Image (cartoon, rainbow, N blue to C red; front, side, top):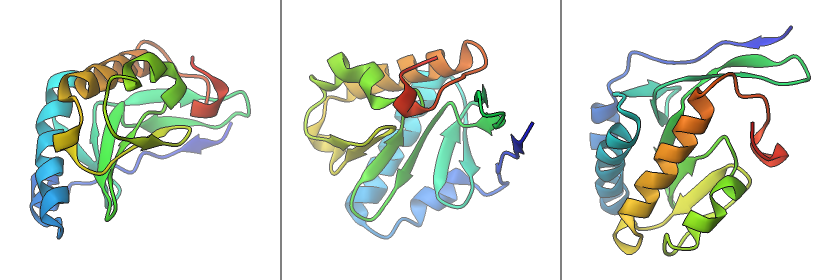
Length: 147
């Protein structure tokens, strides 16, 4: 069975956020640090070089691929803050209707300005996603519709 090694690093997520070049993206990243810490009850850790993760879940796909990944995570990209939803954006369709301006792909939520979205709704989405992922070994990719 193929296993993916987790790529948690020892880098300080707060230093990473403080170094984000765009002021609005940096402001939003500070907000996400607090929001995701509350939603997951976990401290932030760097996953790779540009993703801030909280908690961890185990996945195992029918293909044999398995590994560990952040149960909740975000990345302050140049054009938007990306919130990763490994359980799939569709799993949160009802909540997303009340979030405010955003775009999405199968497993990612793109937010250009957190000042324009309902942070309580975003926190609930993160909380629900993290709870789904950590309930047991997660067995489907975001596009496959849930656990």
